[in-house]
Length: 277
Ligand code: ADP
Ligand code: MG
Image (cartoon, rainbow, N blue to C red; front, side):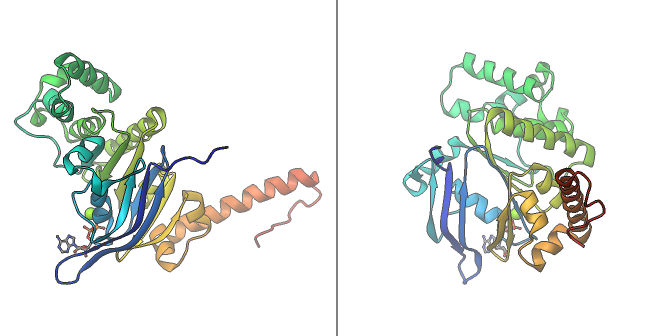
């Protein structure tokens, strides 16, 4: 099988602020199309900085970022941002624009026809199960969860393949949050989007990710699937972030799976054999 071309590559990306404060150092990441990447770490670990270097809201001090085969330093930042969706917590919708205008900001900049914009807005609002009439409302006339749904579809409106999401659901109640997590996961799977999602919530990361990137003090500590992290946390920091309870549960699940396989293979001859005890 031919090797897939990664959609995004970060090579030795650093950001040092004036005064010598290193926000991120030597970030190396390879992201495949259709990946759901969660950047997770404590506050100040460099998640937002890493994410913002990808759409050039922050210029790295050194290192290279390749998006769809092109060094982004050679792409006009405004043009780049039209190709990469961006969703942030709370701030998002422009209060004096109605929902239709909010959703079609980028398509308008791209000079889409009124007809094409209207069709896209209708398609997207259906996708997040809100009534079409909401397109005429203003953000203040929607609940927090509904506003954030609009924030999500706005990031999809110009058919961007890559979407950056910086703690998008942090301020929402658990039920609204769960609904939005499912929505975003479905969008990623059904529309083949690539998502880079910042969170400090391990449950959210384990639920959504194809790959989790653990960060601490500006560095990448571990990259792996949820299962890999649960089975082989790289160090105590990762263990702590995952939590003892989840690690114990994961170990119990592995033991059970192995027991089932052993029982099947031996026709029950080794009943009671516990490989991990
Ligand atoms: P996170 O999103 O993981 O909470 P950030 O990427 O926002 O972390 O910040 C990483 C580090 O960079 C922190 O130590 C923060 O104080 C520092 N930092 C962020 N922005 C600036 C800035 N404009 N000037 C100086 N230091 C900054
Ligand atoms: Mg942040």
